[in-house]
Image 1 (spheres, rainbow, N blue to C red):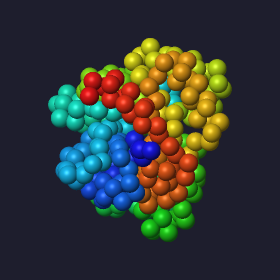
Image 2 (image 1 turned 45 degrees about the horizontal axis):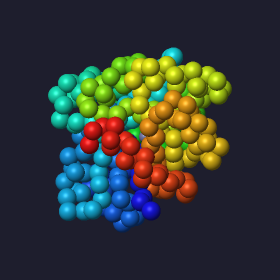
Image 3 (image 1 turned 90 degrees about the horizontal axis):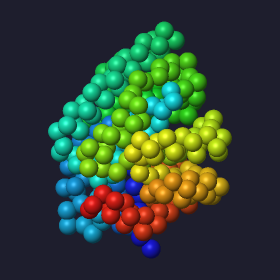
Length: 281
Ligand SMILES: [Zn+2]
Ligand SMILES: [Zn+2]
């Protein structure tokens, strides 16, 4: 039985393992196929590619991009993208700029709440990678303003938090186009459809498929059997490709284990075969 994890983050976004350390961990855990899907960047892929040289484990180039759909943020994964495509890289660069603008606004709100943290401190926490809200949370914890990552998101940084600032990101159909233009396969990440009933989910899925969406992340680190079976139904109904992954972030999401999620993650290898065929790989 192959062990597969198609959703992981490194220090190039908000994971705590460098690409090399992540490849080492994946090897130790006996993974056969690993995809790295950093937020908004492909910069960690070259290092990971180098680290897998001589190993039997396969590395699939990936990315996870934020998009909006009906005024809500959603994440779209891209697999088998060509990271050296200059047009794609130019699009990613503008995407990252909106991330920094938002960070400044969040820090201003935290200042107003009496929490004194600077962009320099957040940059230090993020190392070389894309800066995200988990890094702000880490600094808040380090400086004693809040106790846990969960509290930081619930009370301050999450969509109901006091310092929350929505991010202006491209529409889902644009992100789908970016991924497709870069030779990749766009897949809807962790489809949880917060606030959507089953019928709404199906309608939303239909719209996205018409816009070029090719698949669903049916299997995910924290999904229940019921949730997975609902996703399987959607994938079948719209003839979508299926993927799965843990959404591993290392110490920034300590309850998620690489290749296993919360323990029961299993990604069938035939799904990766279908993905590969769709990507012409
Ligand atoms: Zn995500
Ligand atoms: Zn992710």
